[in-house]
Length: 375
Image (cartoon, rainbow, N blue to C red; front, top):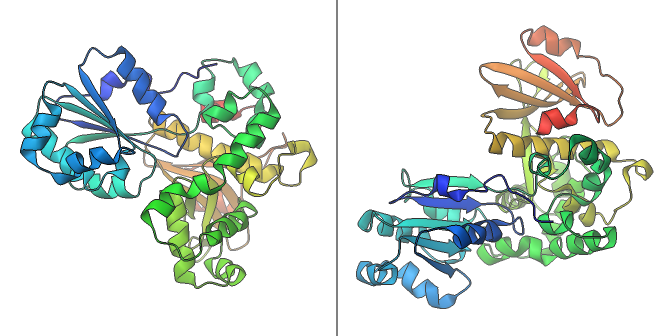
């Protein structure tokens, strides 16, 4: 089964004198998305990859005459794994500035170098698309709501990497996740950062995997890993930049009654989280199904926000008396609170939430209504 992705027609984002950047975690289908487009485009294109060191010399040298010869006769330049090419942002700026008739597509599996190099050089010259693991929105092109809900436990355990979703057996899904969650998961970090002890990354991920839905204490992580707070913060930042984890901070309009300093961390793919802790048991046999549910809903909601798009600032909310709202969206000048329940039990609205934010909404998301929340 070939999954129809949200950005099925890239022609809507490709324009002369502009760069289209496609970001996202490794193995989510960025190269496939670009190559599928190239198979059907009427543009005369040149396709290269950052894995080819011979390309580095041309695309990192910023020699205008050489670049003009390199691109001569083409309407579109496609660059896969662009983050591996030194100074690629400045080079792409030079190309589109001096050859305004050409179009560029560039994919990057990491936000490290590509984001750092393209942010300032390509201001006003780029469109950025974020490609996630397969979303429930996308799967509704292939399954109806009833069928998708029947497969819910599968997504809670094995996640939504394309190769995992299309694998034929649960054993194959687990094998793929174990392969991805090995050193391959950290490939971008190893490529762009010098780490004294790479094993610490995996140890840190394991600690985070058991704290989904909980506020994470950097001091506690530091003590458990026997490293200083500064190193923990750096590693957390690296894991976020590599699209392995993402964080939510606490919302507060009243610091005397609410907690806002610490963050919660979620895995971009819940299957990776389960691989890290080596647990592929079904939800009914687990004591962490609430954590699985929360991680799943947060990430699927972020996918929906990205693809719709829905412009929102995202938080969680907790009071000093331990009253909580799992997910808070600040958008359209309003607050929208969501409580996640794996069971179909209803949850009471925290009184302090209503007292503090009388105009805010509150909704419980459970297995009956979650598709409306994520699709």
